[in-house]
Length: 215
Image 1 (cartoon, rainbow, N blue to C red):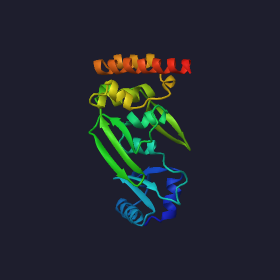
Image 2: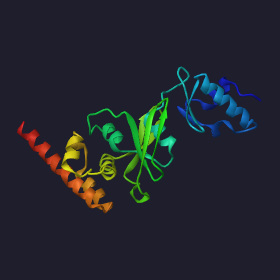
Image 3: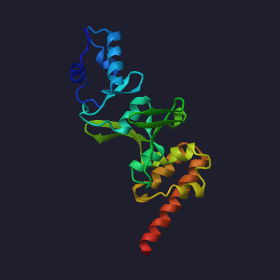
Image 4: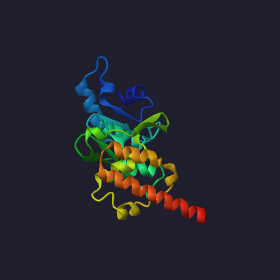
């Protein structure tokens, strides 16, 4: 039986992003479902984010998909980190044009109707320091803690431990960062580069605190 769009809306409900598998329960023709999804995507009623992953387009969205939740779903096993997480935590002032995540898989980039999503590779032994965050509207995503977001960025950036690079980040609100946790995570990674960066950030935080006291 051919699936109608009203039926799709009932099945998807309030899910901002859904997978094709959600529509294949029961006595349905998988080929017909795929054809209908292709038609609705071509007509602008759906957004295809990648093979098997879709979002409702306005005005049928009950809640706009949060970019961090989309990032997690595009590449399973990833978490939002680097500049994206730092901006989310209020530690850098710039708006970030793409959502950057890290994962153990291959690096890549997805350009979708909901934005650009970039994925950086880190080894399995560094996949820690993130938590499941409530994004509101029933949406959640795995996002790096402030300390891990900074260390991931330093790890991936050539010369990321240099004072010049750290100054260029224009780090702010460093009181929100746990400097002991930062040093502990750098030591856990067993990376001299990260240990140097953690010490440099601690020095920046002390300098900021001293300037604030003078003011």
